[in-house]
Image 1 (cartoon, helix red, strand yellow):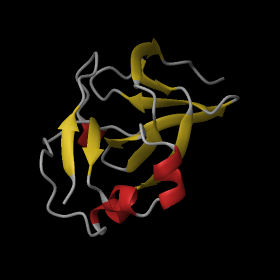
Image 2 (cartoon, rainbow, N blue to C red):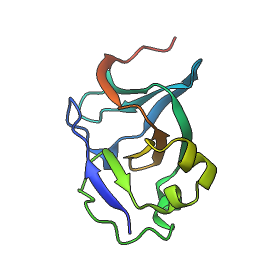
Image 3 (spheres, rainbow, N blue to C red):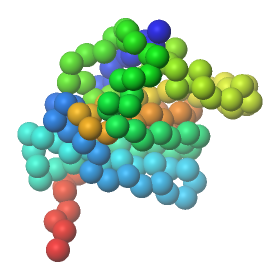
Image 4 (tube, helix red, strand yellow):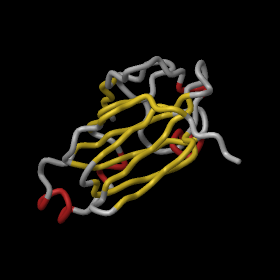
Length: 134
């Protein structure tokens, strides 16, 4: 049974109304993800990680069908969690878990797209201006 611990973020984001607006994998296994802020459409919540080992993006519906229910610690409309005991973690190779014993599992849940990240790094958040597409 997975245990979810909410992670504080710098702005309130109703996760059921949010989604991933942008996803980038940079050199050095750095990941940057922009989430929509439903109450402030001119801004985005930017999540950054250095040294990511595994990333999984999937639809919220697909996540809800995993054998991970019930979940302890799930908070309505919360976006960010640190997770222990998940099916996703259990599916990782023993070699990965042995060679990277400090890996942690983070999960970001929106109303549409969900993100799982395995990393030794701590997530960082920033509120950024949304760029206007021309």
